[in-house]
Length: 167
Image (tube, rainbow, N blue to C red):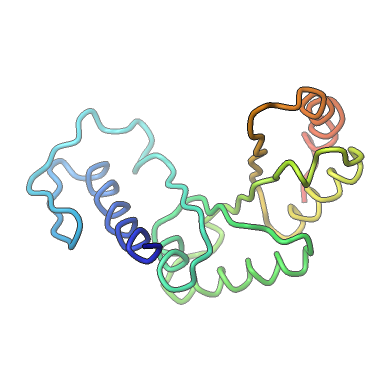
């Protein structure tokens, strides 16, 4: 079930963070149990590699993201005002759990329908609109078979225009 997966994820994130940051990790949960478990070698990044969590479930996932994620991947509606409201709500949740919202980088996915066949200026505008409300990372989702013409257009016309742009 969706709820069960989310609850397992809550424990899994705690387990991974413990393994990355403690010499011997002990954890007792409903889904995972560790007793003096080592994780060697430790990650190079300190205190651990960035933890990216995607989702928007208000009961389990968003509180998990607010407490533990370094990067949050979420669905961004077409309307930048809606995206701004989603981020504001998430930022309030971060503050509620005692975390600075600026510590969590916002990321969204650009799907083929958002870029395929659209003029480069329109795609640039979409990305800039998202960046203006706080999104800093973008994943371009391209399911196989890959549209090489779309990739070339994106690489030649969209990426260079955004490379040095700041919100």
